[in-house]
Length: 447
Ligand SMILES: Cc1cc2nc3c(=O)[nH]c(=O)nc-3n(C[C@H](O)[C@H](O)[C@H](O)COP(=O)(O)OP(=O)(O)OC[C@H]3O[C@@H](n4cnc5c(N)ncnc54)[C@H](O)[C@@H]3O)c2cc1C
Image 1 (cartoon, protein in one colour):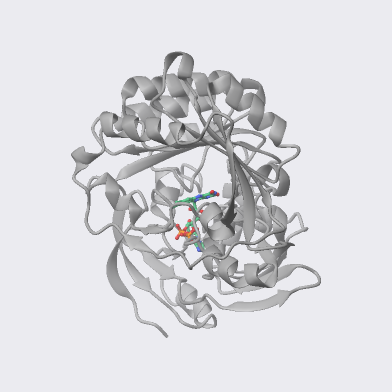
Image 2: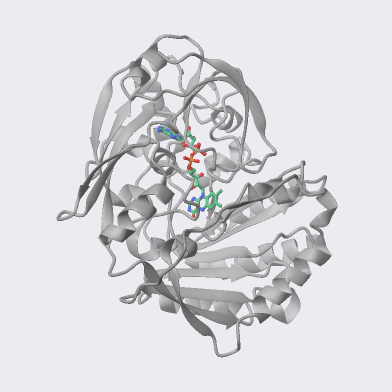
């Protein structure tokens, strides 16, 4: 049985931190014992790529899954891959692509684990076609806090499945999963980049392309204002028949925390301006290996240190198509006026709603961007969250560090059902996180 040791953990944004007892098991059978032996609150943690406090558990216990990362089976006929929950999407891409397969849903970092992916019901750049990971799941095995193992079928509509997908680890520890792969003809995508002059053009092109292009993502200059508000670059990608020879990505590290002043409105504005201009007016097409396309930031390890020791917040919302243009215009205006916007923001469309009670995806436009931590950021985040609520949208718990219980309740209308399932599956309230306490995910009475 692994031993517990005190450790300070942090979210990827490096603003929220807390100390817990951590254990890092190497074999799956010990999970049941780790869950049942104590009385402290407990939580699973993958690779800590959630930005806020979803994977923190102050004063409790945290089970690190990073050594439980075996790839167990690839069904090349049925197109399924079976893995332990600590396997990362990066490892899957690197192992499967040479065999002509790609996980059907992959987030924007290869460092996220499959367990963390299911617990946040993650989406990729192809959400409008493939949905979120819960829609590409054959089954998963969940160890609930009483030590029982549950085999949850992906096409089942059980309460436990719906509370676990996107349930931020509060139903137990996901041990294994079988998820869908897609066949890919080569190791590369053909990627076309187009310049977008303003928000209306961007939103219209995103809507047009969602019916015909598998991967669609926009990079938006959140510092632009006036007639250029919402300008940026649209990326359209599809699997390429022709591959590329590419040396494995050489990881670079950020050697130290950048001084907080290095990132200011002027340096960000110049970067965004240059980034937009590097694409010629007629657009540009190139072949890019999947890894580079899917995980653009992973080549620089610890890139979160560029925001300095104060860290940063990420805001990600999804707003319905009907109210989306108005909501985004308000948000981008507010961000540009604040001067706090960071490097390029991500704008894309989402397709079907997720199946989990707390799944983030729903049809609409999603906007994501970072804000360096500072005295005015809490107010800006609160205003963005309130615009999101007013327009019928929601923010993403994987990125969240500032939401309030009231706004959570308004955004996630199935929260009561989620809390009821938690009360049944975990009546003693053993599974908990800093996020579950902050947002009262078990209900206001028991947190
Ligand atoms: C650069 C970057 C790009 C990103 N791009 C995207 C994107 O495109 N789409 C998207 O959807 N998300 C994206 N994310 C968010 C990321 O995919 C999620 O936060 C994901 O959950 C991180 O996985 P992790 O293994 O690091 O989980 P952690 O951050 O360690 O944990 C996340 C949650 O999962 C729970 N959990 C982890 N493992 C288990 C387990 N085995 N059983 C039960 N619960 C578990 C934890 O308790 C916690 O609540 C991005 C994050 C970064 C840093």
